[in-house]
Length: 289
Image (cartoon, rainbow, N blue to C red; front, side, top):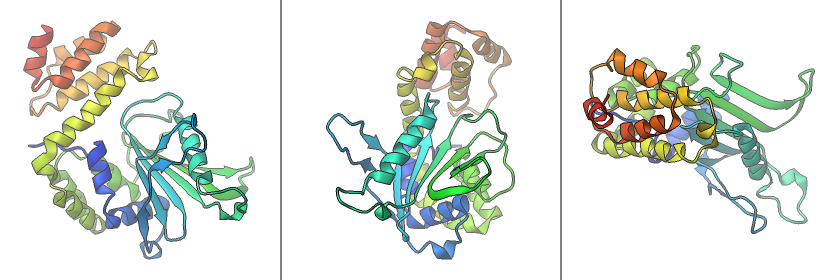
């Protein structure tokens, strides 16, 4: 069976290029009745730089609702330090981006950030969908102009409408996508969009691109360079090996060997080798395991 990944950058952006997908996703995540979402247009993902040395902000998916609400949707497949600070930076830039000199503050629009993360970001909660608003200690809302949603794709599902989207992004075949649509009719148009994208024909490119992007960042990411992260790297190696296209389970001896390794240089070499291997056997032969 061919492998697919809608977490891949190109596939993720192609999916949200379809307005019916954007509308259904925002309705399910934000709780807005579908009939109230008259339009969701794509916006420029590049946040305007106010001065030359200001850090450039580039959003994955930038949207504007018919009521001028601005929305940033991001798929994050690798661990990243200071993620909360990064989200606040993007939200603040998005909020102030349109205001020009001499304009009234009433021109500022509501901004919503939605992050889909492929790792555990919030260890203090079992909820997979966390929503953050500007409120005081008594729960009184200051304003609804800022809103942050964190959706963790690896946590246990709870029975809400967001469940189907988590299943969709975790799907590894068109068959799984079709099953989601069969169970919930509102996802049928979304499943049809996935089919029309021609993922089955070009799936290797998307799937390899997802892991190539993730692999490229492993060498750069502060999180991976920190001491004590060997366990996370071992999990990434095993994930790569499990998705080489073979149906057989990984040998338990190999799993334990990889999990018990703590030498960073060895794990780094195995990681790159696993990303390039076309089979588990090729990986074992390459690394003499």
